[in-house]
Structure formats: C-alpha cells, structure tokens
Length: 97
Image (cartoon, rainbow, N blue to C red; front, top):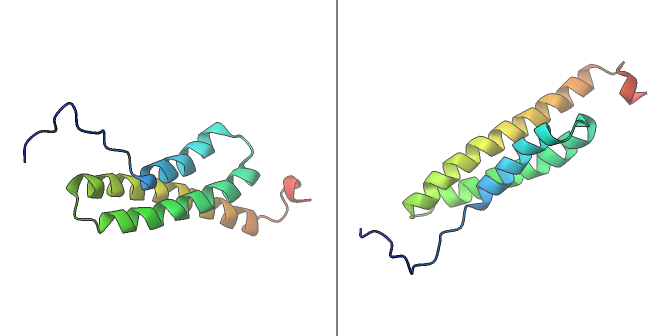
C-alpha cells in the first residue's frame, strides 16, 4: 500500500476514542463524582458500542483505533459502575442524606 499523499484528506479519529476518552477524562476533570458517574456511564457505553462496530470494519487503521476506544470506554464504564456499586453498598454516606 503506498503512503498517503500530502493532498489526501486527513483521517478522523474514531468516535469510540472520543467517547471512551471523554468517559475517562471526566473523572479527572470534575470533583463531583456523584454527578460524574451518571455522565461517564452513557459516554462509556456509547464508546463500547462504537468500538465494537468499528472493530468489525475491514480498515486496519479503524480497527486499531477501535481497540484503543474500547480500552478507554471499558475503563470509564468500569469506573462508573464501580462507583455506583460503592454508593449502593454505603447508604450511610453524608451526601446521600
């Protein structure tokens, strides 16, 4: 396969990377984890769906990006689910009163 010419259009980053990265980055940017978990969960799940869909593509570059997006989305989703489980098992937290 020849290298891309300078006049060829640039390749966009997969949506799974954007959504997975957002689901991870939001944990570091916002100190209100009670709100963050409800934002990170749908972002991470959407990143997982896009990652699986893009991983089935024939394009090797898109599949590599999909793997990166899947890892990021899995981390963000696991953090959200883990925090929701923590909140469910600790009903005596002062923020829940």
